[in-house]
Length: 459
Ligand code: HEM
Image (cartoon, rainbow, N blue to C red; front, top):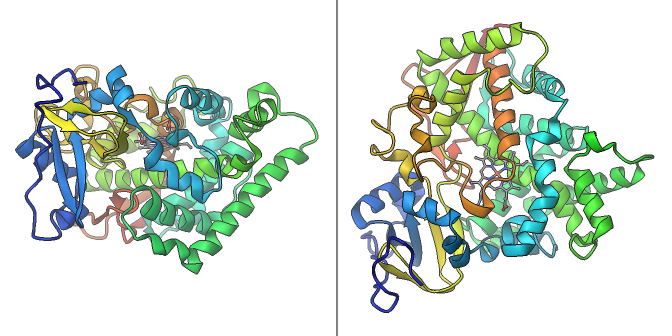
């Protein structure tokens, strides 16, 4: 079969061109340094399909707005599957399946079970509570006069938020173990940026055992409850356990630990990296900070939060969040396997090939975002809506596996940043400071990124 823009037939299509790189190591260094901009460069030079030599492995990449759109089409669904990308993680947890590793009808069924628990519906009626949890966590870890390691502090905050949202308590004593387990799993098993033997390291084994202990505890707590949770307060845990009781073949006992701890795997790095990047972008652009401070101060001055109006009442902050997610996406590419032979961008992709879908490439293209390297929080206003162009904006992925936690993540991001900029005066280490980034396990600010808490604004 051939994709819409490919006039070439399968028989005539040639393999995607190999990107020129260094002898032996190919493009390994360039890709490791800045995968997002490396893909943009390749896209500009080679088109929407190309291959990259990384340590002798030839990765197939399809990229750009074409690739982003393709993921959402019926053809994309037929041509791409997710199993291989996530299967090692399923095995590591001793589970039978997971949402990200399934496709088709099974994926639909699992997504339906988890939809409510992963969405902002799960915190309906509890926005004020989540705002308070956020404030408490910030007050504890962001001390006036200190230099705060931003990513680490944000990781602790996310665990506080997700723990309270899901189970009503915060597994603080497990935060280090959750962080370590996720670091190894994502680095070695999912993004494969680190060697397999690392999974034997005692540090990982200890952390994984503790994470399993946490999962078992969550299940035991649920089973020890005296009465069922009322419908309006049901969380992901309730929905998963109900589904297990209803259909133990679909949700077997052996999958529960992975399902209980799944939100941490999905939410910890993604939210922590994104909020940390927002701290940087807003402080780096001094014209933006006072406008956001005025907006969040006015928001909190109004008193109890109006949940229906929450996102609409912070347009500048949301502009800054969306703009940061454009320039610092945590998912530069999505990984899939070719489900059949097909043609993309005039080139042949063979069944079984591992494919990187470079959906973030348009984020850096002037044709979608004029002066694309410029941080401009007004791009998302109704008048400009640059992100609404077809295929232009994909921070939460594309197609059937688009982030299921998107609506919840949007609220958590806004709450975190609103509280942070409302409560503290922060500054970068120096006026000319330029952010160092990391690419493993997920792209984002380096762990060494620190900011100074100059003072307290509001409590
Ligand atoms: C800044 C925050 C976040 C970003 C940028 C983000 C991004 C993404 C992306 C790009 C994917 C697609 C991966 C793929 O196609 O292979 C994804 C999937 C997913 N995300 Fe998020 N995510 C965020 C936060 C969260 C949170 C807080 C949760 C839940 C607690 C969550 C739950 C999920 C789930 C369950 C999936 C799998 C969906 C499926 O396979 O059907 N995410 N996310």
